Image 1: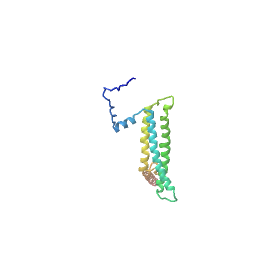
Image 2: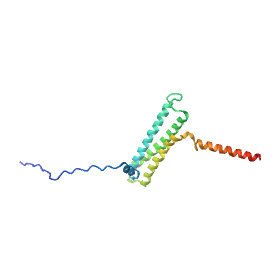
Image 3: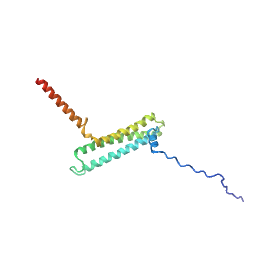
Image 4: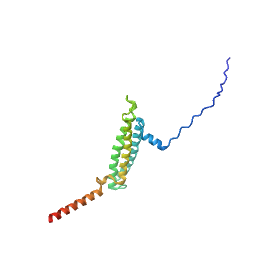
Length: 174
């Protein structure tokens, strides 16, 4: 009969050190300067989902307006602005970057394994976020129904045109 003796460890138990906490600024810089295709793809996907939610809120306002005949919630100009912004956001800020996000996230499934021009693609994600935040800001500040170059510039051009025509009439009379 054999007996087993319990071995007692003479080495002290090593505890793992807690992971070092990184600051929010460090995490932001890491995400903005990444070249990892999965992180770039996820940034595209998360950003496009945020714009999907914003476009969905605009769609809810449009649906609420169309629920019953007559104006209940939005006036004509605001309804047109919401309709225009909903289409712009869903096409240019949701569907297109969603495709790019899936393409960047699925690169590991291809034989290539690495993202060509990874830093450029990472910068494009940041540029996409910045330019996409400008569009809703324009909805709030100016509104897409105001047209280009905007009502204040149109009024200035009309006044300048009428002033030029008045001057030309004066010269014709003399």
